[in-house]
Length: 273
Image (cartoon, rainbow, N blue to C red; front, side):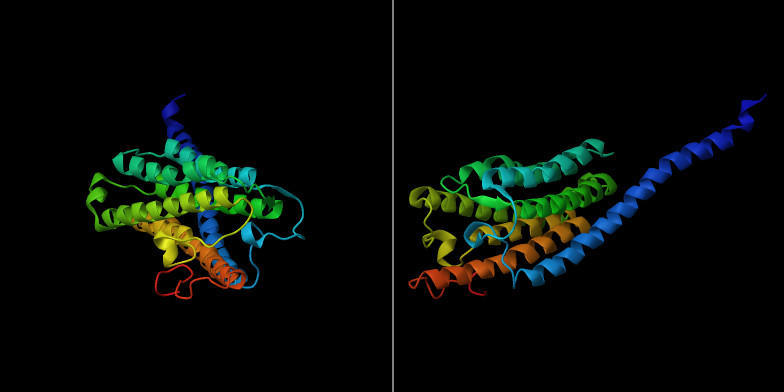
């Protein structure tokens, strides 16, 4: 019997087998984007009323906990792991994707494997429920950025000369320097003062209470620009929704606990708020 008769049927079957997983992934990707944007609105409002119970806002009543060093390592690991996976699966690993991949890991390798163990002197309990929520967010965020940026998007080499990429990478590097320098200065303060909180001084701390949050906002604003993508925008929006209220709460906390706290210092944006 002539096998050519069956070729159209075999081709159609193979196409269906290929298309179905892709359709499922695109549905999951769309739904994950909606969840991240929706959660950003919810978190932004909620955090003005309830401060997440870790760090200076640590308090009982949030169930079991783990040590903060292992909490950070556990909850941050998902993001670099998923980006590595989607980078490996990407169809066109050109220079653009390699740079984006390196930029992502630049932040997350530091945040996952270095930052938790740099915080000497304060390995405080960290609520397990917060860790689990962070893992869920990092899974969703790693998925939408991994699939949306590294798998779906097709960046050509001329993207390196686009205003979005050039502006974005400058903004990201600026935010990275601010964020990491602030983290280092806070780590030094903690190592020098043990369990006691003190007023941070010098550098951007003279202008705002939380330059580490300010730097991270700038970082992911840069990421949104250089990827010019909905996942990048979703990450920036959620970062703002999470860090802006916490910075405002931290600023109020410093004012309540230190009578001599500088009155002209703002919370997170120099000279503004």
